[in-house]
Image (cartoon, rainbow, N blue to C red; front, side, top):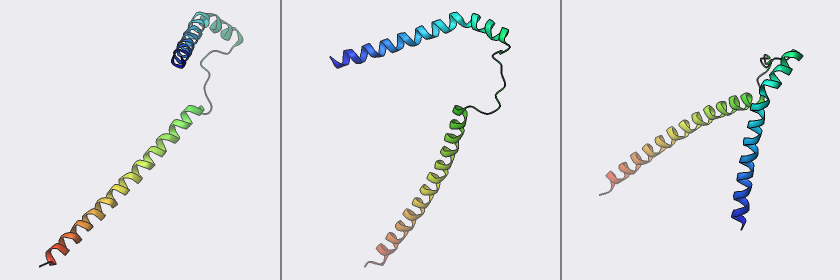
Length: 96
């Protein structure tokens, strides 16, 4: 029974989203005329980047930082493995 409620909620959410988009599309010409008459055309320059762009830039910076740290960790792990293998082969050669 829970699955049915989950499915119903999903479809109701989609229906509400589509209704919102339809209303926005229908009222777009009216809202544009109102904005024009009020002197608030839709092309206002943004003085500061919006929150989404700021977060995207932060995530990109963190991604670069983590990528660099991962490369360093992999490099040092390779060096340790190579050193370990070298020590292991040297001890194997010493055994009679």
